[in-house]
Length: 283
Ligand code: PXG
Image 1: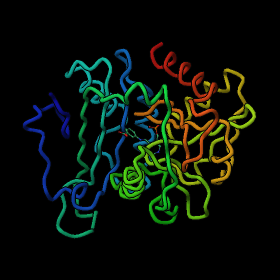
Image 2 (image 1 turned 135 degrees about the vertical axis):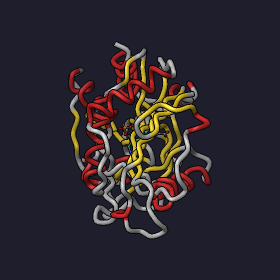
Image 3 (image 1 turned 60 degrees about the vertical axis):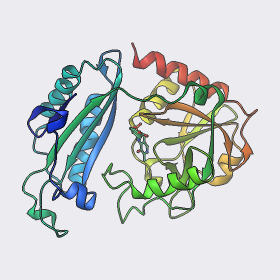
């Protein structure tokens, strides 16, 4: 496998970074997870744009311009003959010293990995997921803004552990005011009386690219989509719940905190949007 490291492709065995990299020492950096569908990188520009905004927000200078970085992502996909797969694009603060100060790190470190994705099992889509409410509150916007896709995912990892401890795969995270924010690696939607609702990203979620595409596809199909703050009760009383994300795509939730959602199968609007998404990404 070829990995893009800094300014060139190297063999996997030679893809090594320093133990003084602040990405490792402090989780100081940003990343993107991107899909390749049928030979085409999905929403590459949107991912590059979000990476640059995240980096800007933490005062990390990406040592390549967006066009060059996009071309290098494509070159990594091509070098590994990835036709359907997954790209991890990482920019760390780079090599520094044993101290927090990011200003001593001279140059950000670019890493691009393109590999085959381990898809979610088919039965997750057919049967739906069970999810729980996490006790771990989503990062306060005045600490680490949830819109920054940073290398520090401990907030989400702690919530994911709660889910795994309780024998389920995903957890819903709430913000510091008690409103629904997102799942640990996905955005959240509900359906009630045929209307689709999702929290605004200001409630403490990543500005998900799948979320945006699904909203556009839903509106094109004449569904009404409303962004509004949701509370736990809105999920308890929903006809359908579904999650969206690069890995998950569109996936139904059939059990929330041991409450059956709908008839215990992914709902009709969820399945319709999943079908439309699958068609859209391969067109
Ligand atoms: N919220 C969070 C916290 C995420 O990490 C999303 C929402 C969905 O955003 P996108 O832009 O992907 O629609 C994410 C993204 C994985 C994996 O392996 C998770 C994500 C991305 C890629 C892979 O679980 N999460």
